Amino acid sequence: MGKFHFDLLAPIYDKLIKPKRPTALLMSIDRHLPMKESYNVLEIGGGTGRLAQYFVGSRIKLDTEKLDIDKKYKHALNDEFLYKIEGTKNTVVIIDPSKRMLLQAEKKNIGTLIEGYAEDLPFEENSFDLIIVSDSLHHWAHHQQAFEEISRVLSKEGVLAIEEINPQTSLGKLIMTFEKISLMGSKFFTPDQSTLMLKQVKLNVEEVTFHHGSSYQLIVRHS
Image (cartoon, rainbow, N blue to C red; front, top):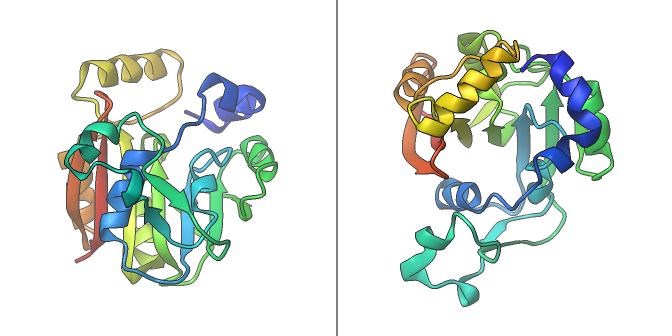
């Protein structure tokens, strides 16, 4: 989707695509992110802050008292009770090319909001413990360049979490067709294609999971 489309939809984006707790993604991150008191978190293409708002805390904690361990993966797709946020110590940054989307994020008091692109991240090397790319990869113009930038700013022990539409699924193909008709300029990649691009910048996929019938998640670290 081009910047124009997001600027147009910004005032109604959260109503059109209602925010929900990203439980499955939180679980994946929790399994791989090293324990620290606080984290520097970057969301690329974070838009209105629908996802970043869940990281404005310290450690993402698994609420084991309310969790049936044997059923956690079954419930992860639709329940909201699995995680809780504690403290207010994380540094959260959203970078997005749409100023109007960022104006919506500003209302959520998330953190630092930067108008910019994945291909040119205005940060020093090893700046972030966690980088999130949720439903934005297919909107980038130059994917390999963007991954090189991510590799540069991701800390040595950091985690890159990607959630993306899977063009191999029926719903994924429908979304792909819709965005093509709408002239959004999107380019979708299968999990294998994304993994190959990441490998070329020395980023290694440690976990691949499939969710909701149309998306996949990658947990990535430096090789």
